[in-house]
Length: 151
Ligand code: DQA
Image 1: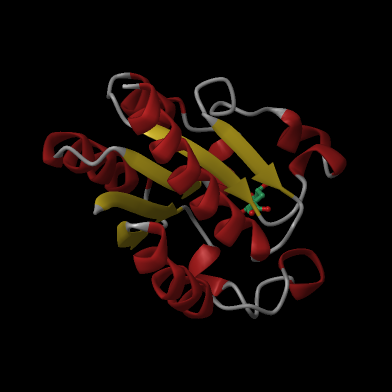
Image 2: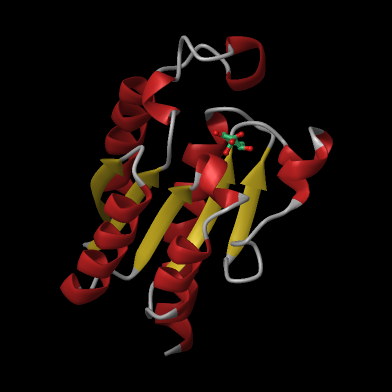
């Protein structure tokens, strides 16, 4: 079983009630349950982490790197546009990650077009709501399989 860390940045603990016209009605607990429900059949074990604090997310990336976690599925939320610290944590690690956004930041306010993660990401899914998390996890499983076949 390959282990994948699922990470969520600030305000995503409010999913379900937070601006549902933008982010949908699905709660973070429901997203977590959906991912846990498909992980086994994809050969993955999951850990989940959400924080509103930048340093906690940075520390969690460090811990994942030290623990030998290979892949991260992350919605950096507002830190997508601002956090050099979280970006640096990924670029200093061997972690590979898929970036996910519920909305499509590129079709929103101009400040959301700044993205400090996409150039490091193995892939990016945005604008598909909660479904994006499931697609992101399936993408990671596929990429793990492809790299195992190439090795
Ligand atoms: C978000 C988009 C970000 O711009 C925003 O700050 C979020 C959520 C998304 O999932 O659509 O908090 O990452």
